[in-house]
Image 1: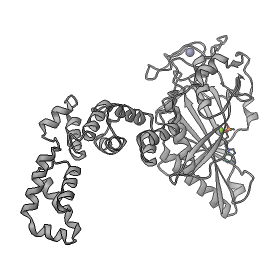
Image 2 (image 1 turned 180 degrees about the vertical axis):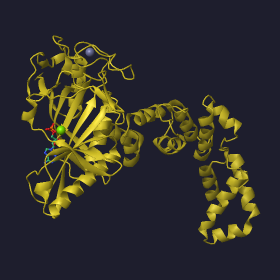
Image 3 (image 1 turned 90 degrees about the vertical axis):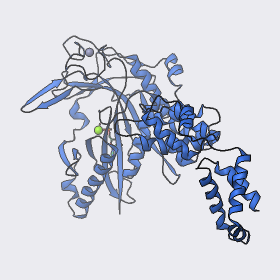
Image 4 (image 1 turned 45 degrees about the vertical axis):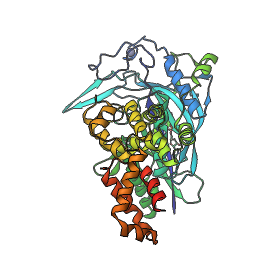
Length: 476
Ligand code: ADP
Ligand code: MG
Ligand code: ZN
């Protein structure tokens, strides 16, 4: 009876070398308050200068979401007092952001898709960090002035599922573009979820609640669920107007509930006004030429993998879901003669099953070149896919081992010599006259028995396809 309405705000930390308005490094893990200068400490008289790299990366994002890139955009001050913001305002883009009116398409499992509108993406400066240590709170301003791109969707999502699909897509686009790490745990991809409900069929928007500080896709899904429940229960109990107000709430992962953090400020409370210390940000023709040429994005790559390498939609989806896996796959396919099928099975099934703990695709002892070569040895029939798993087991423990040496050492070469296989088949046929009679009399299931016997006689090294062909010919 209710329809869920969700709009998402995502703060992406851009991976520039220096901060948004000063030349302090953006690197982390430095001693507190060392990556600072008069500008990001907001000392009186220090002036901000816009970092061009931030504009370049914003143009790339704008291109990826088919948005309008404004030739002129402007900065505004958003005033608020908080200990981690020494200027007592944040420089952001309220009235004319650099990127506006984009779209992002999400794909459902059943193959259908939906386009979500993106209202804007604007540049803004991050705050520092408050560190609470027992009774004492400390402020670290290393992060103050780090560039953020805030990407704001229209309230176009109608379920937690759609919200997660949108976020995962956006996340992977950021990674494909290489404009940010988008690490949720480290806060370089921060999501605010705006949730409301309305009676089905109603066009108007009801009161939205903004849920903050959720640092995993799983918890975002949970937070949406509990918030939707809270709002619909209030409606059903007739206390919607009293209990649901426009406010900011925190999601509590342990109690699985949202809690009021503060009433939602109206724009007027922030006393926005044009930033007097900065010029407008001008996107030049050269910038447009250079930064609207972007790397291939997940959807295009998926289509190409299907066409070029014969992957099915499901596998193409899995492989392009992260830029690391897509690149790994492409490196594997560079090995001559490798088929999409073998590469997919080694990459999406066998390798992940052997990656544990801290070991992942980027630091796997078996890298893309190696796994590609292993796939080649399957596809040129040197070894079976089953034997490839054994080789892989060995390689995981012996990163420096040579693949051909390993195949030899473990005695895993396949017999493809038709002569030798033919005599093996003959021997099995001769040894089982009754079974042959039964098979030829119509008991076709027995075919598997013959294949099995030959495989056994060859200690698993016979190429099953060749054995199949030989037996078919001999048994009729
Ligand atoms: P603020 O910064 O005050 O949160 P923004 O305009 O930046 O405001 O973001 C508002 C977000 O809330 C957008 O993502 C928008 O789509 C979403 N939104 C607006 N109204 C509703 C609503 N009734 N229900 C759900 N989401 C909404
Ligand atoms: Mg908001
Ligand atoms: Zn600085």
